[in-house]
Length: 407
Ligand SMILES: Cc1cc2nc3c(=O)[nH]c(=O)nc-3n(C[C@H](O)[C@H](O)[C@H](O)COP(=O)(O)OP(=O)(O)OC[C@H]3O[C@@H](n4cnc5c(N)ncnc54)[C@H](O)[C@@H]3O)c2cc1C
Image 1: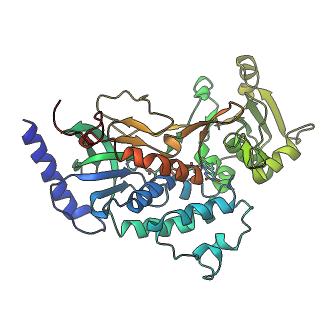
Image 2 (image 1 turned 90 degrees about the vertical axis):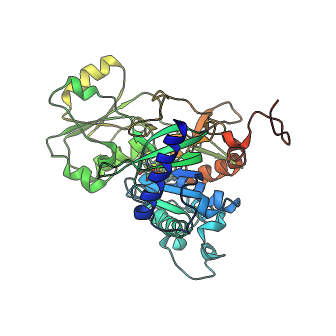
Image 3 (image 1 turned 180 degrees about the vertical axis):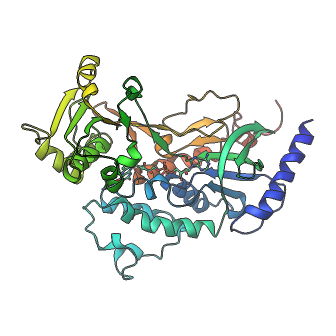
């Protein structure tokens, strides 16, 4: 029975590969991949680059993404001003040999290729500017590995490997086997669903709200807008509402005091949860003491929500992000499955990284923060990939090194 299932998978692999594989060198049909990386945002790009740098053969690596356009970072959030500085983006681009940027490309000595090279290293920049080199890195990596334009709809454990089932518009369900799968599938904004109790209140998604022209187009001068949250994302949206739209009133529901990143010598307190850069400056100037005319800020408990939310016509929830699920999940895993927040292991041969599976770190004052950002993904992946390489079922995990065979 198992053999029949395996033969079926192999047939699916070969028929699908002949039509859908975009680029990369050829490999023997029917054999499983060593690695499948799902998602081509910054975390997926770094994973593929570092696996190749660590001598994983390119033909044994499969990369899947619906569009290969630098993930949400390069599409949904591209109008947003970064909270990290240019210098950290440059470090990210330079870190992987396999990205194939010419040596010294970002030091200026080879002339200008990307707009980000003209910016001071300590400055922030629009995420679109930071995405430009990543689009080239993606294309360079796709020339080496097998890449498939599509979505992994489900994962199943099979024959001590992972079966990745893809969704296609034709209704076919091609699938691939891989010894190791890395989920770099990103995250989606959380909703509080409070508008469901108020029929005249309409939700504006965070994705729309982070695109200034879409936000302006969604609002009229008669609108009173509720915005929940006080994070970087919430304050960016608050600022756009006040500076770019002519809505009647903005009510900001918050749960915790505004928090700022504090640079102390060689480290940063509230590095991952504090406001930074231009957004921090704007917040310091506008949200302490007397507030801008059209803004009211209220503590978000049920009494205040009941009092103020009925006055609003539109609501935006900027209250964080949650892991993006595969459409049909992982077979026999609950949707809330956990992962090791220090090393990204979900199960043998199954790992997570990026904003969907961030590393948690405790700073020297005991604050625990999820480390989210390009350079942080790179640092984390550099430390965990050597562990992941040893943690598939086929590596004989659970046995002391150097001992093979049965006990
Ligand atoms: C508003 C905002 C501002 C930010 N600013 C910065 C900043 O200034 N600096 C910084 O370093 N970081 C910043 N970040 C944080 C972080 O770098 C980004 O969120 C980044 O997009 C996370 O990268 P990722 O690769 O984990 O996910 P994403 O960029 O979301 O990429 C995930 C990819 O996986 C694909 N995918 C999902 N499911 C599947 C599937 N089933 N099959 C195949 N593919 C799939 C998606 O289509 C997507 O292409 C910001 C985040 C936000 C929300």
